Length: 315
Image (cartoon, rainbow, N blue to C red):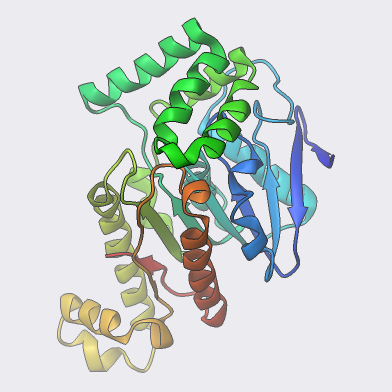
């Protein structure tokens, strides 16, 4: 049972495979087991490192307030302690939030991002969202982790043939410490790096399930910000090359169009649009083959191009 001691917390982690390092981050109330069905394929060409976040699984559950920045700081310290840098980072749900936070705060650690059914923002801007979070916190306080687990398992895996998946996720969620689970849930509310998306220049792939809680269109909305920022970054890089004169004279928009047309080979963009079909929020469990294939295609392209210019554009 490998663990690593940080300043005030010990994190459990799983490791397998060999090759370029790939950090796998799990969802709220879950563990590294979120990636169990996908890991065998990914481990064929990558060194997988999958920690349990503070307050989750077999990691310590120290007192105090939890937050996305704190969780991400733990993961950054974990990477530093292990001597990891230039790591591919993949996160599902809450794990995707940690991945965004890492890319903003510690870009030196992150070679690329894979975001699965997640986003860069948890600010409660609508009544529906506020009610959703308030209901989840109330159910957790009243029913405890086991009661909430029964409800969530049915929502994540609603089909009759998904009984085994319901059982596994139900058991995993039920094992949570009530107080740590409450603090982790509260710690997500209000977090955002939406305004800081333009600082992310590494390649990014977003995997969006067609049956996720949030729509594909919602994810494309925040990716629009990332796309514009990365085009401008590449445009500024282009200004420093001999090819500048051929496009700059026609204006910034024309230059952006030229960059998009050039694509990966010349300017280093990784352009990927991936929808996970017939899938709910727990895509790594209900459609592991689709997730693994999309990730392997993306990571292969990242590793075959220069990581220094541009990033992912998902349209």
